[in-house]
Image (cartoon, rainbow over all chains, first blue to last red; front, side):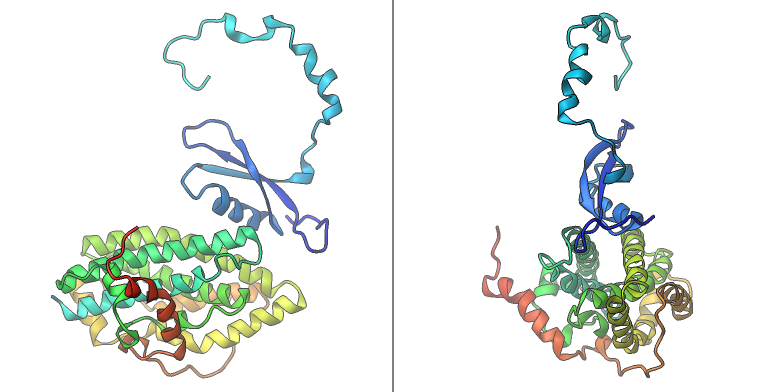
Length: 100
Length: 250
């Protein structure tokens, strides 16, 4: 999958997600430049997993990510702050459950 | 001490030590940061395999030499690497085409070495083969992109193929040293590495719109210690620190 270069001298930007070895969800690790998906995957392997930090990799063209704007912060996130009942800490987590 | 086995292991180790050094020369000079890291990762893998192979060679020799002694205290005529791996790194296309040629050969060579009755060598081959699969994929994908890329990248990639092709025959030569070592290691009959190698390389080059030249093969001699003028300069740089400060630690 090739994406348009945004600048004549710059390859497109890709966001890299790595899954840690213990089965947790993929997490954003960082970004890199690559001309296409295969090279992005290989570069992600070299830049973000060389010390054995991951068992799976995702690469996503950065321009495919729709981000909230800083000005959205108020209407998006403030309403949740004063509603303590939305937090799950009122429940007891059974012993033996991990990764929660 | 088995002389043929020692020689055989030196050949395997020196190929990887010298190519690892050539690739390491890209450190800080890669075309982009990500590729700088990729090439030096490959260099580290090759150097790591060289260390295991040369350490084993030193133990087979039984004279108390370890990988460092063999890497830093032998002179040019005592190196047993292929001439192809000592050639200067050239441009990025040259480095990637050479890596493709070398890694495709290593793939079939190590698949064979994995079958050795000699457990340590079989183990080294299995470990290095995992790393080599990535080197082959990385180099192959780049050769396709360069060959099937811009006019300039195509021209440079074709120039690299033309320049390197005549050096490739040395990978497939065998002699009495190899045969004696193979018997000692309990290896099955060596498969036709050249045919397998050529099929893989030809497929990549075709996808890259690159052509195999019909130039004659060069004289060889790396396995007997005859090298091009490039190796001496490489060794001068690689060996100067341990030779200037023998026994130094940090």
